[in-house]
Image (cartoon, rainbow, N blue to C red; front, side, top):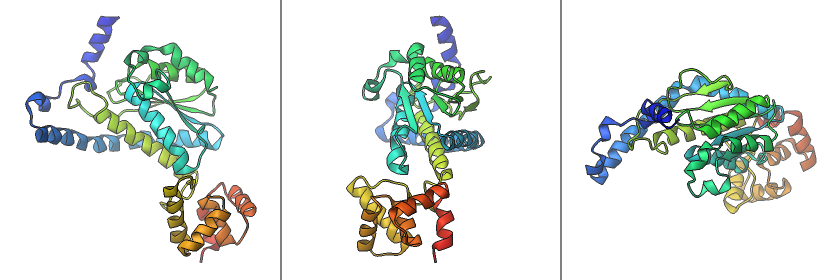
Length: 306
């Protein structure tokens, strides 16, 4: 088994030696930074090539959201942390429940702040995590595995498929054949890392970019923005309160003071505040109006905005 894994690692792009950085330990700091920056510039181009697959992922995730399902990330190490990070950023940005986008990581919460590399091989733990979340046909599970072979996310995907969930695999190597239990593969190939095998570098950057693309685009499809403004954010901090006022001033054309009063009346909900303002209704009626239009603010404001 050990030799089999060794032979497999030898052919992975992410494990290959980058010929441009073979003298990395003898470079000056500025030369190292230049080499890393040059490699990082390749990431956006590689991601651009897989935009069609990312669009398919968005469609799957959006379907899950609109049918009451969830997006669940699964990964180990850097990949797992990126999934948890993206999931944790969705509630404050889009005003959604923390249950809507979730992340499971090999080793659990402790692995978020301290590396526990051995846990990536724990297939049983991944299966238990999927079972604990009661994954069903409404859910989409996205496994993140830069190498394409990490046991934890692959086991999570296999278990999700057994439970009828939709499955996506994000991998940064040429995978070849798609695993039978995976519906969609997103496969940006980035070339060797500056530091051989360190997938927290280009691979990590690419994965973060792709997760951003998927959740942001899916949330836009759900009506979580108006134009390019975050109208579904929740004003739960001083910064978000002031950002909410900025949005109200921008869209409604009202004063800073009026924006503050409107925000209070709308219980800190920017989208609701805008419906209250333009439709001249109270909080309760504004919520009904939003529900009737699936939360698509532009459908309401095009009839009432002068």
